[in-house]
Image 1 (cartoon, rainbow, N blue to C red):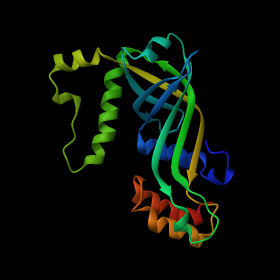
Image 2: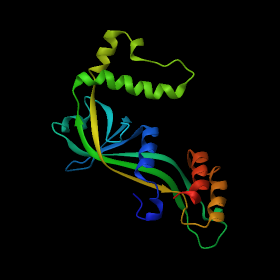
Image 3: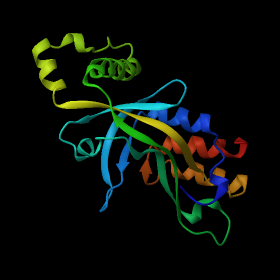
Image 4: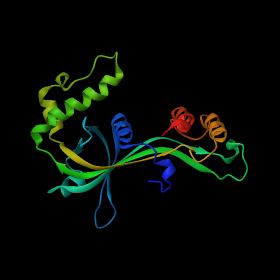
Length: 207
């Protein structure tokens, strides 16, 4: 997380809502060497106390989970390069604006019997965003083919003990300078730049 507290103005509820909506992040588990990393879709419970996910059975992280392990999920949002010229004020430097939320907790494997329910809940969550498309469900699969695929993955749950967010949106700049950068950034370099520009314009009203 960025050390400047001005970029940490989102509360826990807002950070959890962001992570819940993104539903995809980078899972990290420490080892004696480099951390193990896996890119995972996940579901956050309504009370924000845990995140459910599944992993490929051959994933090295699975082999580490004979007991619960500390873990973190990093969730990235829109991001973009900010040119100093866009502020319209002197003596600025290049930077990168972005939104990121880190979920910290204890990761454990869950019984295989929970896998089908997890897959059904995940697909229902994602498919709902594709409406009016009729939702895909596991019931559409051949039972033997589904069972074969399910043998390759395992359910897991991370109990969330900490939530941190960085919303770096040029809050440390005058309103006019930030507005100028927001206007220009949409045509710049990064990801989801239109959404980033909207967040930057809203930053002056963030509490």
